[in-house]
Image (tube, rainbow, N blue to C red):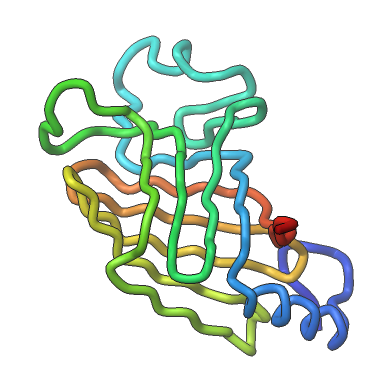
Length: 168
């Protein structure tokens, strides 16, 4: 068995440890790159507004604070957003993808053939609805796709880790 995005052979013990970590559902994802869909590449100078090491389709998030945290049936997320807004969300709203609280629904599935977990979330905020798909791999890589009711879809590539239990 191996994970396609890694040259390291994934052993049955690695898969067992991976499943154990995921079952606790106490996970933090940090993204290294954002990949917006639908950015108008015909706009002159748009690439000059992006962080160093970025292209219009692959934005470097190194050094930018971002997170997607799973704690049982709750999520906390704060992800930078690059893309096009489809609907007005009003004044004094953040430009990032933010949420903290219980999700409307979640579906978790282990795909045996690919040795990966897929989480599907439906999240409702006061101003927006999100459909989120998170894919976790045993080599600690992740892919997160956020589809919004008000903005174009964006995906994030990064890494995940199991959160350590806080001492009481």
